[in-house]
Length: 80
Image 1: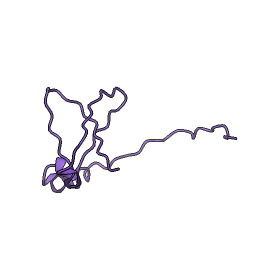
Image 2: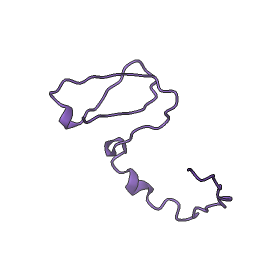
Image 3: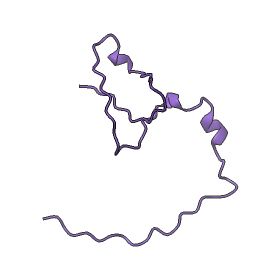
């Protein structure tokens, strides 16, 4: 079974769902369930502006990013 799952936050009472071509002309069950624990949003290539990467590539070249110290690795008990 192929499934499509998306987590979004809406600020209106209507939504539009873009489905894969393989779902066309088939009966579909649509279930809407509030999800308090999920924060991620499924992003597809079509969601980005057409020239987004061309406009933003190299934008940090003047001020390189610095990775701070990551702290000590947590030692955990062995699972038996």
